[in-house]
Image 1 (cartoon, rainbow, N blue to C red):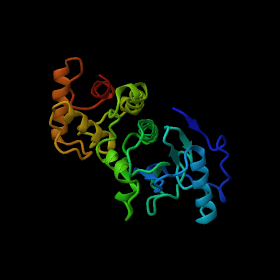
Image 2: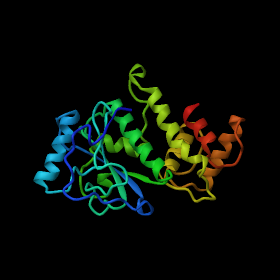
Image 3: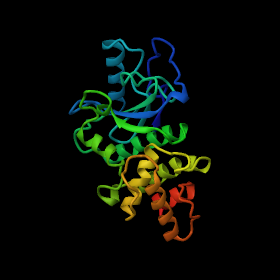
Amino acid sequence: MDFISRDDWHARPPKRPFTRLRSSRVVGIVVHHSGVVDPPQGVTAVRAYERYHMDTRGWNAVAYNWLVDENGVIYEGRGSGIVSGATKHYNFKTESICYTGFGGKKIPEPALIGISEVIADIQSRYGGKLWLKGHKDLSSTACPGTELHAWLVNGCVLYAGNPSTIDFEGIARFFRELGAVLDAKPLSRLRRSRGEMVRWVQARLRDKGYDPGPVDGVFGAKTRLAVKDFQTNLGILRKTGAVDRSTWDALFLL
């Protein structure tokens, strides 16, 4: 993962001290895009956002918590656990990610991996319970573009394209890091688990030929039965019907 901090990209100081999010209020992750067909690239795009947000819009700082460019480089915007300025009515209960390219056309694989790694990091800090939405799901806008939004809705699949160009190590690292939270809090019907991690489990079970019910992010009875069937058929997992780290790894890494 290529990460560039605020200091490293020479971010301007905020006009006022940043406000921290209350973790108990955080419910989701919102993904945005540049909205420009041929935007500037790399750190040039990040600085352009900052100028526009601070000088034209009069905002406190660059609006997003995180930005990811076409090459998958991750830039610290406002950073982790900070109230953003990107999603009206949701800034105090979400973290935001901006793809600095145009989300209306095919997204480069490195960018998708970078976005996925940021999603995994945010989820790990909030127990894996957050929903994941595009800006258009929360407001009257075309953001984050048709291609990027479709990728979000369809489970953030990272396996498309020429296999020789895919960063499989990065994909595996993403799922390992995301699954680490399940050591303490497995996904289960008993816990009434819900959120993006449950939706990924449901989509993965369906890909493997099981029937978890609707891919809706709600760990219901059919999802429990599908998990238990998967555990039984694999033969090396405890048949609990819950998704602990071992079951997660078997689903996504085997």
